Amino acid sequence: MLDIPRLVPPSRNFVDLLRSRRSARQLEIATLSEVAAVVREALKADFIGTGPQEGRKRKRVISAGALHPVKCVVVDPDAHAVVYDDKKDEFLSIEPRNSVLLADGLAKSAAILPTANGHIISLIADVRALSIIYANPDSLLWRDAGAVLQTLALVCEAFDLGFCPLGILGQELADALLPADHQFLGVGIAVIGRRVAR
Image (cartoon, rainbow, N blue to C red; front, side, top):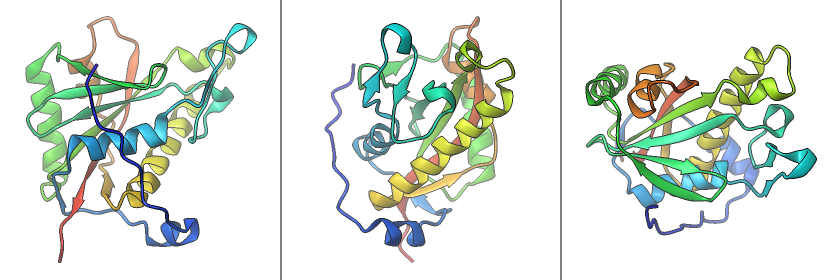
């Protein structure tokens, strides 16, 4: 577990926040504490089900069946990766299984938005999670991923940070960071950083 200070966003009017949110394509590196605060605020579980509610969570982001299959890995410019454990509300350092594949995934992200020097946010989804209660969960998985991206964007705005989704799925990062037999799907990549002053 990493000891990352907890930050609280400044108080802002929600309508103003909605109206000011824009993707930021020119970014400078933010601290890991700032990026972790965004991820925690968006994905922290306020309730974890037990018994008949096993597998369900209550969070700020919507999810089909309250199952929340989308997880978040934060990768810094030096390719150090941390994953957010929403059950324990902890950030854990992870060693990549395949550093070449990780470098390829990061290079692909940098090529899409070379002006964004920030932390890469890799969204990965447990493809089995929604099948617990849904017979055809594929479209729900993608909707959940979109909801996570939107929530991260709004939370970044609340913390006065820049956010830009890259429009790629990032399967390379999932494959690089997780065991070979994993059942996770790359469902989105974004960058978080400080906006470059113009």
